[in-house]
Length: 107
Length: 120
Image 1 (spheres, rainbow over the protein chains, first blue to last red):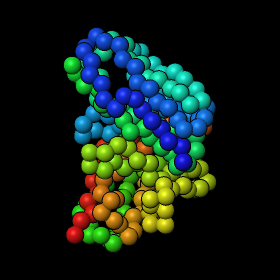
Image 2 (cartoon, rainbow over the protein chains, first blue to last red):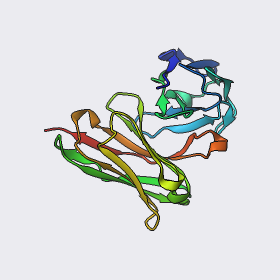
Image 3 (tube, rainbow over the protein chains, first blue to last red):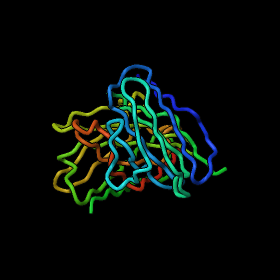
C-alpha cells in the first residue's frame, strides 16, 4: 500500500497569511494526487486534482504542485472560510489512500 | 444539478448487515467510476471501495469479503452491502463520484454522508 504523509498535522495562521501544506507518498504516484478541504460536519470538497489542476469554482488563492513523491498545497491570502482540515489522496493504485489530515486553525 | 444523497445508515449490532444507498441526480452512476469513503468518529478519511466501468470492483483490505459495492442503472443508485459488521466499521459513510483517468481519478462530487453505528 502507498502511504501518504502530510505535514504539519496542524497549523495556526492568521487571515491574510500564506500557508503551505506538504504531502509525501511512500513511492512515486506520478500526478495522481488530489487535495480536499473538509469543514466540521461536512463532506470533503475537492480543491485540486492531478496534483495541480484547480477544480471548477475553487478560488485562485489555492494552488497545488509536485509530482512523483512530493506535493504541496499552497493557500495565499488566507480567508476566514479557509480554516478547515485538508487531506491529500493518491489514486495511483488501490487501495486508494489519504493523508492523515492537516488542521488549519486561526491564530 | 449534480448531487449525491446517501441513505440506509443506522444503529446495528455487531455481526449484523446493512445496505447503504447513494442516489444520484444530474449524472449517471453507471457511466462513472464511483466510490465509498468512510470517516470514523474524530478520525481521518478512509477509502472503502470503488466500482469501475464494466463493474470491476476494488475493496480496502479491512472490508474485503464483507462489503459489496454495486449499482442499479434503472434507479441511478450506488449501493454498499455491509455484512458481518464490526464495531470498527462505525463511521460516517460517503459516496463520491470519481473523475475519469484523464483527470487522475479525483473525487469531485460527494454526498452529505450517512452514519453507521455498530454497537451492542
